[in-house]
Structure formats: C-alpha cells, structure tokens
Image (tube, rainbow, N blue to C red):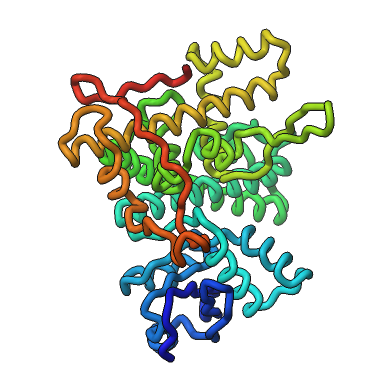
Length: 407
C-alpha cells in the first residue's frame, strides 16, 4: 500500500469478526474491511495493516467485547487505545446526522474518536491485574448466583410453609425448615425435592465463595495497596478498585475521579436557580463499592459517621447526607491510590518521600501510553494530555503510608 504518516485504525469488534477503518490525520479514509477473529483471519488482518508502519488501534469496548482482540494485538507489539461505546455512539450520530448503526459506521465513528479525542486510555497487558480481574469477576458472579438461588428457594418455601422463611436465609436454616415439611400430594413432594436440590446448590456455592474470598485475601495485600487500611473496604472492594482504576494518574484531580465514580453531583442549574441532581452515570461497580464502604462506616463510630451526622445537622436528608459521604470517600480513595503510587515510585527509584514524579508513575500500568500527539500539536490524538496529579508527600520516616479515612 505504501501509505505514509501515522494512521488510526478504528475497530468495531465482535466475537467472530471485526470491522476496521483506517483514517489519516485529516480524517481521510484510506482503507478498511472485515476480518475474522480466528487464526487465519487475524493473520490476514495483521498482513493488511502492515503497509502503515506508524499506526494506533482505536478499539471500541476494550473492557468488554473488544478485550480479546485488543490483547492479541498488544501481544504482537501493537499500540491500542480504548474507545468507550458511549463516546463512539455520540460521534456516530453527529457524523451521520442519524442513528443508523452498521459495523462500517461503527468502525468509522471509532476511528473519528481516535483521531479527534485526547485522553483515551491506553490498553496495556498487566498479568497481576488480569488475575485480580478474573478472580473478582468470578466472585461477583458467585454472589449473584447465590442471590438467585435464595430467591428461588424463598418462592418454594412460601408454598410449603405458611408465611415462608425469613428474609435472611442460609442453607443450614433452609434445611432445618424443610425437614419439618412432609407433603403428601405429588405437587408438594416435587416442590420439596426441588427445594432440597436448591439447598445443595447453595451449600456448594457457599463453599466456593469462601475459597474465592480466601484467595483474594491472599492476593490483594500482596499488591501493597493501602486501600485495605480504609474502613469499609475489604479484599473484594480493593480488588475491584485496582482492576477498574488501573493507572490513577489518568485522573487529573479528585473531581475527575468523583465524576468517573458517579459520586459527583450533576449541575442542573438554570438562570438564578442553582441546583444539582444525583448522577446516574459513572462506573457503577465502583459506585457500589463506595456505597458499601459508606454503609459499613455508618454502622460504626467512624469519622465517616461523624461527617454524616454533621451533614444531617445542617438540614440535609438521609439520602443527601449519604451522597455527600460517598463523595468524601471517593476523595479518600483517590488520595490513597496516589499515596500508593508515590510509595511504589519511591521504592523503585530510591528517592525519598515526595521524590520527583516521572519514572515512577510513567512505569505504572499505563506506562506504554505515548507522551506525544499522534499527528503533531495541531491535531489531537488518542493520548492523555491532561495534567497529571502531583504525587503527594505521603511517606513518613518509617516509609509507611499516612492515610486518614475522612478529612
């Protein structure tokens, strides 16, 4: 092909096929096509793009359906950035003037995002985070499976026992209740047998959950994170934060981080009427982890509880005070992860507390992110050119972290 200059290859990924479009700095389309994701299709894809020596892959949904192809490209030494599906969807509407959706238009919108937008997250391979992600995702799935089984068991016990069982039901309690039931009709006997099978499933799931929790309790502290020191965050919550956040320096400040976690209120002011509303956006898994953290703090005599009570004393409702607390805890998590990064940077470079930021943070999970624009200063490329947060002087003379749960 012989095309010169740097190009962005926008990709709309699927399980068995991908559609790509090759776009230059001036948004000119110079290539594209559809390829399979099997061994032969991937070989053809790599052969097709080999003519563009300077290339960056912009792939939609690298945390979802695009993950498999993104990591195969990274293994081949390619540079990949993640395009959020919501961002490409908006670009598609503005680019075409309508919402028509095909694989080709999706690839075109992804390529446009890659050329126009700065701040896209670079995708890197991190074996430790990948292991944590697999384990914490599996633990969440087991919890969801347990909840479904309990719901099914409640429905059966309600027809076997007048009034049913209490809301909080364990497998052992359900087994004792079921032992008191001796139906005589065929429907009742069948219902009892199905309930007994569900109890066996619950016991098996409970054993697997305990094993998964034990594994997470061993792996998360080994990362050296200070998140476990925060009241209300356990191994599951810490693992979820680590795998979802990745490189904390991709958030310029705590306000950007709060927006990403969905704890920052949305400005809904109009004219002289200033008001804010609850954010329904952000990373909902991290928002849930912060909600659990706030709930645990409210159950104990913590600084978080004191902060919540102060907000209530100013006239805020319970829900409003909870939202304020979640925002404060988001700031605490952000500060703690920056402290962790500074601590690791100090250990790697041998500098003292608050040493110069640079090598330490740039060698983190997003260290392969390019430090220049793809097409020069005039054209934004898929890199994060937002100011990095300054790493705090967070280490004492013992080298330990200084963390306060709520300021």
